[in-house]
Image (tube, rainbow, N blue to C red):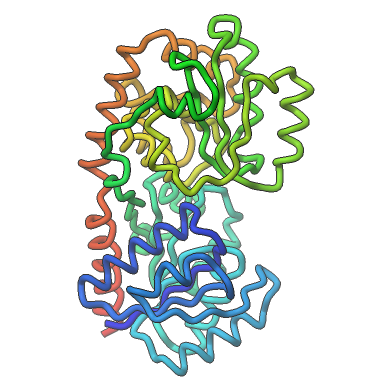
Length: 362
């Protein structure tokens, strides 16, 4: 079987990392992989060992030329199936190119933002099947009119191996210039509005009176960096909150956190939640999208309603007050990831859909 994968992400964030896992797993199963990705993207070099990589200009939703470039690639390579993994124009123009070439096409949907029913009825005709990375996203599509037999959930996964290590929290605090008993809360997410950084900043005004030495680390980059710096300064939080940027050694430090907070308004699943759980870090997240599939309320973390700042503050205080509860939830999170979110299961799930589509088309 030969599969053309289309991934428009330029950085190895959550979605592109999942594509890399899938390509590696399929290669182990004898699938011939071809990967189309943006020129100069990080995934291009990382995927070279498991796929033949073709770098193309990918300029977003208005880049109609992408359909032409992908159509030419499909005609030249003649894959058995096209798998579109991302948005940024790749979902639309990748589907159009596959349809014009007469090659079956599947789409991975990684976000839970709603779409108009007419958009679902029109755009999703391009695909022979849709895979969602969480049941929450699948339910969104069903509610918008997509037929149940045309959409399946194959959950995202994480390689837990880098997080199954013995962490040294004191050494990490020393590296940050902090006392060894400092409570550390982290947030690992792009600096964009829907991730909810503003809610965490607002909640701190209820948390700091009980935990005045608490420090909060924001890991990630994004267009809101300047606005967040300004908000941190204006709210008098400069001594509490640090913007850490994008770090390459996240597996080496994630388990040094006492708590991960992810108060996103929407989230397909949340790879950073899987990573934190693997590292035995308890989590507070919103009851939205696929997050409740990773964070089981009362088991490996706590769930709050999206945007509920008082509930977020209360949840933070509850966990920061109780080291034994944090430890118990951390252990439960690691068990959950190892049991339900393996890369092997994700790869088998994708391959099963490929075979189903190809068998149906005969």
